[in-house]
Length: 120
Image (cartoon, rainbow, N blue to C red; front, top):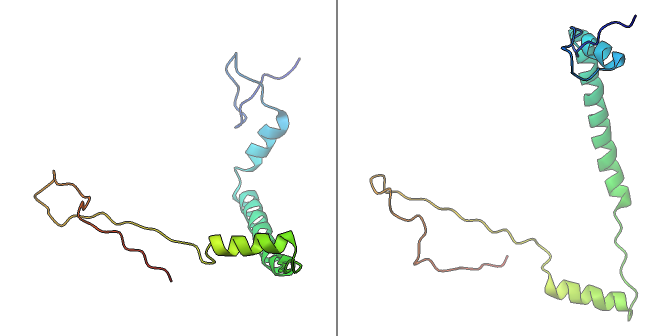
């Protein structure tokens, strides 16, 4: 005779629920102990730190800056790209505020504001 199905904590399941594989039940039961949880946490942390250190080391090696050949279509594309897209990203931000505590129905948008562009 087969033992009755169990849930993740090893308790008997109610009838009509899905059967949980035995290895999942065992794994969850083992995770109740702090030592295994700390071991897994340290394992994942060490993998993350190792991956981050490898990423930064390899990112420097994989960075390529090859100029296009003179007179080629790729040179024309690079010139067009440099003319149409600025080298620095444009950062836009807005701030809405009011200093009128007793005027909740006033709009926070200043309709008299003028747009000012500043290129760095």
